Image 1 (cartoon, rainbow, N blue to C red):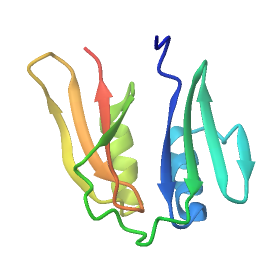
Image 2: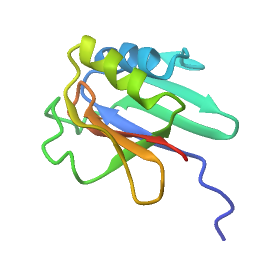
Image 3: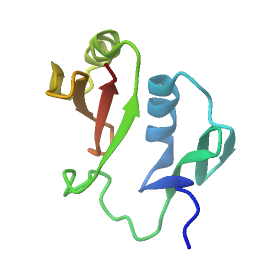
Length: 119
């Protein structure tokens, strides 16, 4: 029996590009760091990034296969800051039928990340 969802690992060819990007995006330093693996923690949930020998292309060739979602409080401000850093924004903040806002962008590996601002 499954008891909880404990985390996700994003595999990459070169961890250094993603470490700084996600530390800046999330506004926190990774709680665990070594040369091939980092991990961010919120309570019992872990978002980890690691280098993997089977990753052969730095840019995700199928970025729409999955999207990581982060809940945020100030979606407009975050997207504005990402644009200043020349991050590719795919969707500016838009109000959804459920009352919240959604925005979408790519990380340095081409993975698609969504921000959600709850109503």
